[in-house]
Length: 388
Image 1: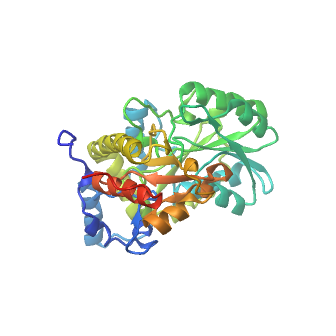
Image 2: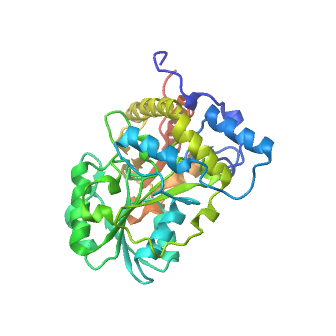
Image 3: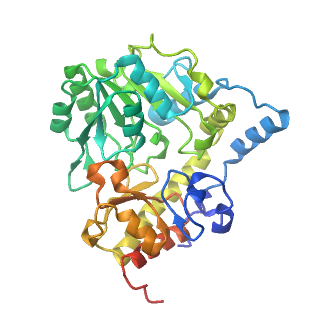
């Protein structure tokens, strides 16, 4: 692997990582290797570190303002997505799910049906439910080349619904919707009078050859009425700093959005987000290169050690969806990996009924940790260690 470029993913030792206080490193006992929640094993990009250092030294710890976060995102979106967006349009919110709930409240009523494409990010269920809406699961189709939207099933499920809560790039399936798929979603939403809310938090983390297209950037009436959510938190490892952007389409219903959504955001999050989108693109690309190598490494490790694990390298994100059903572990496969292998992965059933027998594994780590994760998985599945 000497030809693999250095990456921020290779910068920190496991001992240093275990000193962290984030949920990734404190949820499990010390002997468990955690590769579950959406945190990356990287140091902060230097411009982010510097802006936070300056804020601390200045005692700049008050309430949040935009801090140029929206303008920086718009520049990034123009460069990466070809999306021309007025910096006055994005609305500062605390995080993506807070923005989702604000949009839900603006365009639907308690008791309304909200469709989600499952298996999907677990807070889609809990936040929609707490907002008083009814979750309608619309399973993705197994195309033989990974999970994708099922147009016919989505069409049926959107009938009588108020909102389609979309995840693109998809977590945990890892696919990136094509323009044709997005137009099909828009056509279906328009036909049923449904508002689309699109969680695009993983958009900066596309793999080589893939291109993210923001839903509200396409030329379609349904896209004009939609909302998208963006943040620097996943791509630059800033989730604990709390700042995201709710972006209404040009015809979106915004009159019922609260005026104080900004109050849930953290000033450090807005400062760090601005630095990320404006000054840390090279760092992001180094991470993406490391992730590209890791998704290939995972395929090779599984083929050697656990060939019956179903795995499709993701088109985006650092989250991988593994099918362990061939090993007969039952619905909650992650429990077996934890008990027998001391490996912490996310249980597939958290993402919906379709996740029974699956687990989600995070590859945003070093090659050594990823290799150890597969070895622990093999140990849990009673597979002998490879010969030295």
